[in-house]
Image 1 (cartoon, one colour):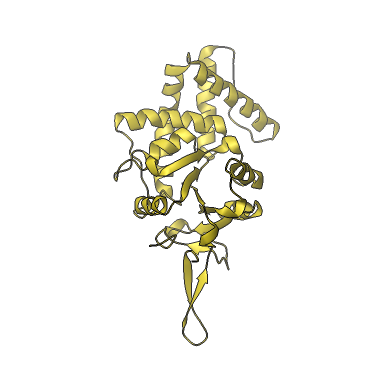
Image 2 (cartoon, one colour; image 1 turned 90 degrees about the vertical axis):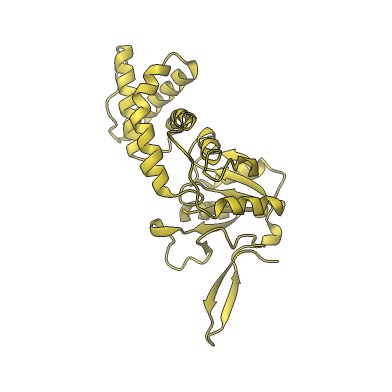
Length: 266
């Protein structure tokens, strides 16, 4: 049986069914988060502002923690790289602990405003959000069709994985706290930028190599046409998920879905 389908009027006014992917081949469903499983507004209007508000106080409260100290050093290294690349980040001073805290916080804010995929920043955001989820200030959010899709795919024997620029911790917190309940029980594996950039085909090859499956056995779903293109370059099947006003499908794009309801439908 073939997978999710689109419908278009044929010349005679009939409905033509066009297969978007080869369902028989797919063993692993790999998902993006932002704009795919989760509304973009939740990320930009809830998660990012929360991390931005809490960043400096979190760094000050946890500066003695070796793990946080290592992340600050990673930020310092990224700052140097940004300067070399002519990006003009806020100045960084290390002449006192106070200046170091101020510099790391200001640079972190600058990265957040730029929607940076810096791994150290993403790790810090995840830890800040962990406190927010624990206190009840934050609750995860997904599109209404997602929990049912996860249950359906798992029932059909599919492996569900997540690949996001957000840290693995942030991913687990989000899916573990949605109003419908903890759906991490459906998710077998999480990947973040430690495996590589989402716009680099090599990242998808690395993900594929971590399974005992051929690339064609993967179905990657994302709201980014660039990401679906590079996943296909790595040999994966891919669908562009176009939801709401933030849709980015290029003209003429064929393999497009608007929700998960037709993907491995019952």
